[in-house]
Length: 158
Image (cartoon, rainbow, N blue to C red; front, side, top):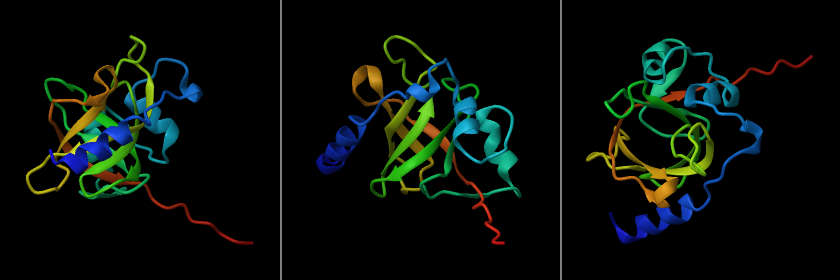
């Protein structure tokens, strides 16, 4: 990884914090349901296909979009996270739940956790994710379906 990018990731990762608003044990799907305007159901990996025709989907991270991780041996139900900020073409910050054990407990919410695109073509199809116990980006590469873009609510004046 380039030295400048690593500095951005480490600086971004230090922003990780748990949220007192979600004090109980929570999984990623429950967290995203509460924190976003998406009405999708099923395991996290199913959200990509469920969103087809209902929400916009794509390969570009945007604030408010939901990143949908594929199902793997390590993530049998996939994973979903909300994009908080785009820091560069290869680094975003996400809010998500049940990723890192925090204070030895799973089911915690992490805010502003760094995610790094490590795909060969910078298409966000493969990522590495901040892992709190090591205070660094994790070594595992996770496949990602893409991003689901919540519809912008329509405001009607009177």
